[in-house]
Amino acid sequence: MPEISRFYGIIIKLFFGGHPPPHFHAVYGESNAVFNIATLDMIEGDLPERAKKLVIEWASLHQDELLEIWGTQEFHKLPPLK
Image 1 (cartoon, rainbow, N blue to C red):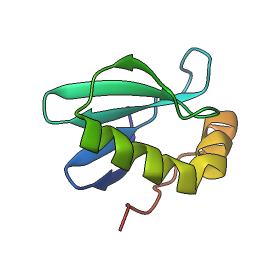
Image 2 (image 1 turned 90 degrees about the horizontal axis):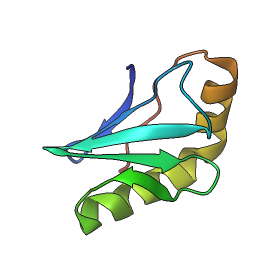
Image 3 (image 1 turned 180 degrees about the vertical axis):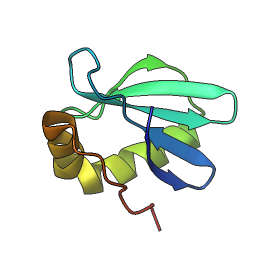
Image 4 (image 1 turned 60 degrees about the horizontal axis):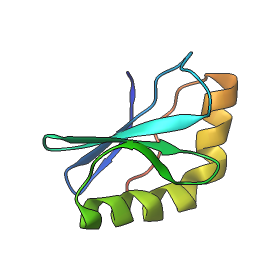
């Protein structure tokens, strides 16, 4: 699963050819979660609340790019949250 971005100890990954809905994975330590790209809802897994908020903040900045990567399956890294 390619790494799309990394910030504050959180790793964002996207699996090409994954099942709908369009989603990405967030890994923070031993915690893993899956987020719907369109709604930014956490649809599976568990993250500490602070990490979840950071992931949603980052994803809201890159939502269109995430959907483009999902749709075209053309990998490129996205900038971290600053």
